[in-house]
Image 1: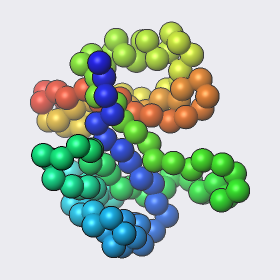
Image 2 (image 1 turned 45 degrees about the vertical axis):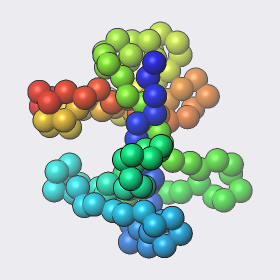
Image 3 (image 1 turned 180 degrees about the horizontal axis):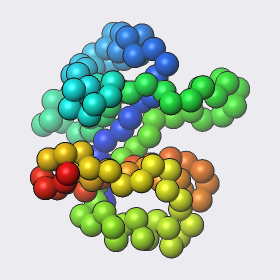
Length: 131
């Protein structure tokens, strides 16, 4: 059964976000910007031997919603065995493409979707041949 494997936090000020999450929760940030060719930091939330997932921190692509406008949350990514079959199921059940399938070279296929309620989520299929 596919499970959440990664989350992403979008931030207007990456330094401020790193300081906040680092000070409050003790999270560590690894700079992956060169790897993904854009500003991106891996969020290390704890020891791999403990329950939990790690994530990413990236620049917010649009203006943040006002505080009174409801949920403004992290994006969760779900690990899948077959990207294309999962995408077909998403679309067949009323989901939409938010950002199309893209290679994380030498690591995986990644894309983002909207569920029928308008919530964003990602899917991720490990593949060392992704290019």
